[in-house]
Length: 183
Image 1 (tube, rainbow, N blue to C red):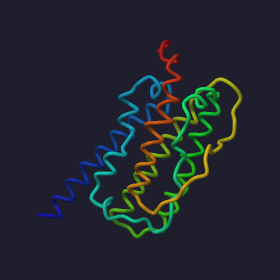
Image 2: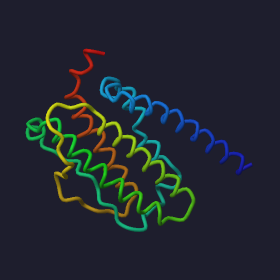
Image 3: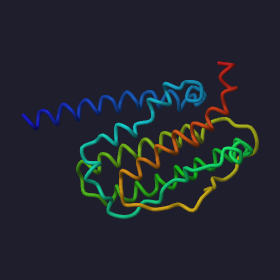
Image 4: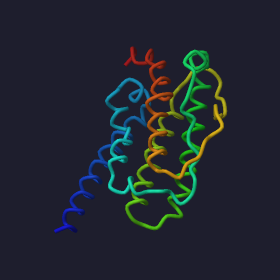
């Protein structure tokens, strides 16, 4: 009975993941959909779902993760070019992605590995969308805007990731709203 219950939960989550992945495919093909559709952005953000996972409360990661740069001064942020903002966000996402992938590869199979795989996939989806946005100005290399802190707490990693998505990333996307008028 417990096995059946876990199987049903896993199957349901797999179906949800497939649904989100299919939405991501659409937004990857047309990143402007991501910019113009707040519901698509919300659907892609799976942090709350990951935080409610059974294994998150118990999880101390096997090694430290460098956290993305989440804080920003609004006035300074608004003065940055679209390319600089994207570079900052991409650098933070890549840093987190590399750390998560490294830990995932050294973790024994189980709940934690599945959770880290989903987090890794979600970060890569954001990277695909953000890097494929058509922006004004010349392309700049990704550059971190802070000295990253580290933690072994998965909960802290998820909180930091959520702050990046709802803070810098959302602020950046809102500045691109003029592209939606032509949709």
